[in-house]
Length: 179
Ligand code: IMP
Ligand code: MG
Image 1 (cartoon, rainbow, N blue to C red):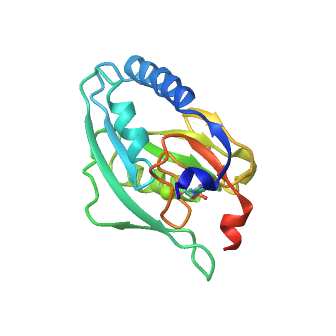
Image 2 (cartoon, rainbow, N blue to C red; image 1 turned 60 degrees about the vertical axis):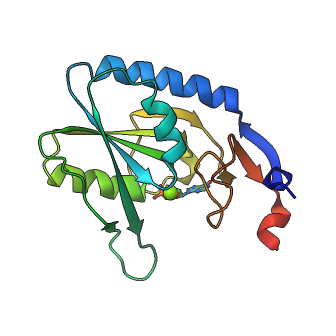
Image 3 (cartoon, rainbow, N blue to C red; image 1 turned 45 degrees about the horizontal axis):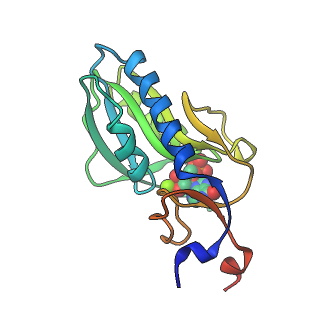
């Protein structure tokens, strides 16, 4: 059985993603001309978006990835932990590339960390924005599209690590959660 059978509806088609990535690529090429920015993709969700976006970037730039885990609940203050190497951001214009902005916790903490690590500037580039999910005061600088407060998968986004390989964004059927 194919994973596409678990999808209730498509929220963003392959064609829509393609034109969004082209549009954001153009914006970044204009905004970062001569700034030699550093793109940092947040693993693992940003992999497809980052891969496609990089092919639209025609300015001098470098690319890196970061793996973060954020702890919610207990008495955590909302700090994040970097798993593995931390990219060297000193004196760099950083563009964080992420799959989705939901509560905002991950990107808010990551942005603070990058600034305190010496980045000249930090902008956030997300494929999806779920404004209704926001709990922290943060917004993205580059947004592919908005989604309502539904759980979406595909194109990097997962449900229990599955569905990241779908070429589009979709909503899972309810029965998938109940299994
Ligand atoms: P935030 O810190 O709450 O903004 O969480 C962002 C992270 O939560 C994203 O990087 C995703 O991994 C995950 N996430 C939030 N909403 C969804 C969704 O609808 N589908 C899949 N993952 C999601
Ligand atoms: Mg993620």
